[in-house]
Length: 188
Image (cartoon, rainbow, N blue to C red; front, top):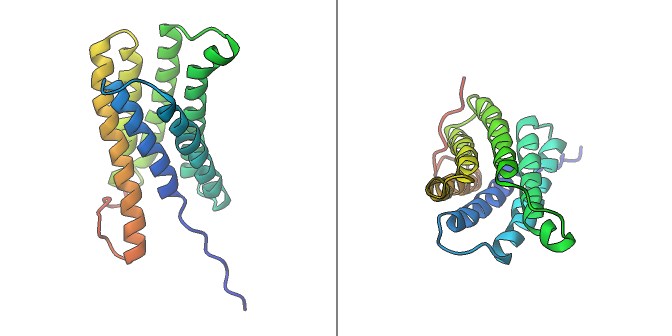
């Protein structure tokens, strides 16, 4: 009997795409450098396409939560880049502060809902989704307050690195077939 092909865990790819892109954007939000093609390219290719690939791969394996999460946040990154570049490319109007705040708040609501699902998952994912929920709401408020926007940048760096840690822990723990980097117990 032929051995069934085992599919690799796509979650580290999605988490790294999300985490690294989030760190870079939020280093910008914290005021360390301007928004440029490096962040936009990361948003398209690693934040966007890599997460879509991970989401579709999770879907193929029947994993609903990560399929929805990675696909949604991959599309978030692509839409965010679109918000930045569409006005420049096609001359469409940029969103108002209220419009962008509403966009970010809707992502905060979605992420808060996703966070509730992580209560049945590991602590590392709870940190990722909990800090991301806070980040979206800080960014929404930050549309009206530059101090809050800067605070959001620092909080976003923490959020992004929590995803990077989770991805690297999943890869390392799987490779060594034991817990090298803890991600916390799975909820009951």
